Length: 486
Image 1: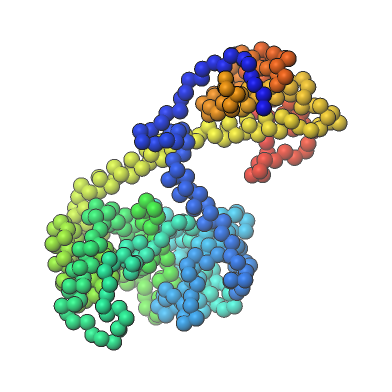
Image 2: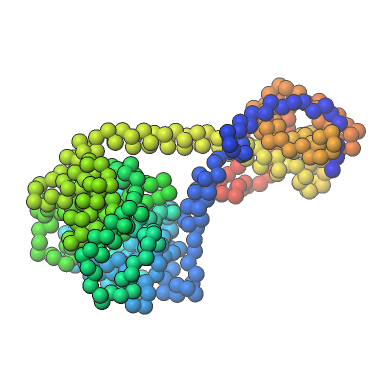
């Protein structure tokens, strides 16, 4: 430890602290940082070969497979598609390194290639509330004939079923839960549904938020002469910011073509679109009652009465319109029912975009300052260079060493480390710009005093780092990109 006897100037403290928060405002918020780190961690997960011995090392152009969902139990697989079982994996493209989600249809042999026309349409469909389909291929890498659907990977998401319909969210115990043989009386079903709705009511603005996102996705799908056909809580994923995305799109088109090859599915698109709207009505009803039991035929009348007593008439009218299968419906007809709530959600999206822009502005200079610190660290205290053991201690490098002490190793009057982030950031910014401002650099033994400007220090830095760069053929940083003097 050394003591710097030079007179320390007062640095304007531009660390703006937000009310009620202790961390500096120019740092990324903890919530957003943790969310990004969690998603990055999920993309880097590797499968344990001892736990998944049957997982192939490569599937076509993808490797590093990791099961996204819980592996099926010995009693059978899960999430069937028209009798076919399915499983999902995270995978990495071999050439690009981009992460994707692979949905595998087990034991599926494709014999009717007419469905590929639908696949091409789905691949062209891009929307903020849709998990985009990238490609479809068959493989025997799993030991059978499997169909693989490749989608964009959105880490950190959960299904709408697990978010709002988990058993532990009920808030009460079901006396019949362990006795499946005893028939439930009607009074029990009605009272059970009423109690469940009252204890687990979702905020109505949240339900309308879901409706706006789902109808926005359906509008694009239907206008492209396609049908979702998988509007189910298990096929809708949601992130921590309540962003919905329809997943598994295109699977039913391929499976249904294979199962019913004699049917002209093109002529049935409008029928499938009507089924989408019915499914949407059931989904909204289930969300309003927060129970999948509500959409059962014997409970639907009671569920609608509960919605009418619990929420506004607009929500009930929308559900009634969607469930009226005897009339022809269109997703565009829902816009008047949504009304001004659309502007509320639009305002929330703009506010979120503004907050992300603010968070980004706090970190925009970090890369530049990081590169500057890398250059300084590569020069300072270098033990040997070009057969010179004292290269880093002489000439221009000596001034950079003293500057390093000036920035990072100062102490206060009591001899304690002076830890001022504003001082560090300000000094590095002035060095990067090369301002004419002069500072006093004092050696650790206090025998030498140098008065230099930031412009001179910048010249020393560029010249010293240029010597290092010119002495080697390859100069890479940790990410593999070339470092060159600026």
